[in-house]
Length: 254
Image 1 (cartoon, rainbow, N blue to C red):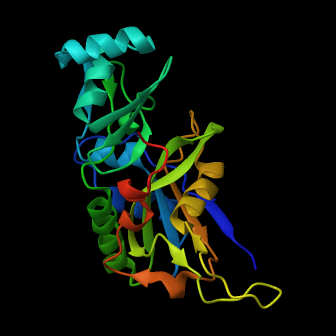
Image 2 (cartoon, rainbow, N blue to C red; image 1 turned 120 degrees about the vertical axis):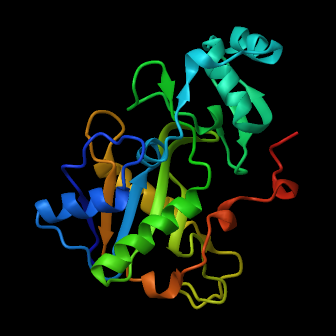
C-alpha cells in the first residue's frame, strides 16, 4: 500500500469572503495537481475561520472578573482569556500558561482552540462556528466542479492529555466517517476484535500536519491519496460527533 501526502502550494493569505474551494482548485491546477476520486483534503481551521470572517479583534474585548482572575493564574493577556471564556461552555482546568475548556462544539482542548498564529497582530481565530458544515460546503463545491468523489477534513493543532507536543486533530469532516469501528474483524491470531475503533480523521489530520507544518510553511491545504479504506467509510451525512467522548464516560473530568 502506498499513501501520498501532497501539499498544495500557491494558496494566498486568506481574507474574509474568499471562496476556499476556488482557491484550492486554482492552486492545484497551477501546480499540475488534479484531484481524483477518493482523495481526502485536509484544511487548516485557521484558513476556514479567516475565509468565514470568524476572527476575534482582541482589543475590542471587555474582560470580566473571571477573565482577570484567570489571567493572573495563567500569565495570559486578559483579552485572550476573555475570548477563551466566550468560546467555552465550561472551564475545566487551569495551568501556569493554559486553560483547558470545553468549547461550544463540545471539544475539550487548550484555550478553546483559539489560535493567535497566522493571523494579523491583535487578532485571533477561534474554531469555525460549524466545522462540519464548512467541510460540507467545500466538498460539495469541489465535487460539483471536478466530478470526483472526495472527502474534506478541517484540522486544528491540539495538545493531548499526558503527552507533550501538539498534533493535527480533526474538528470537522464531510464525505466520510471520522471513526472506523472494526469490531467483529479478527486479529492475526484469529481472535475477534471486541472494542477496536480507529480515529481515522485524527490519524489523517496528523499525517497532513507533517506537510502542512505549524509555522510559516504557507501550506494550509493538503491532499491525502491512496487510503484503501475510503470506500468503507463513505457517508455524505457524516459529522465529527462520533469522535467526541460523551461527558458521562469522561473519567478524568471532575
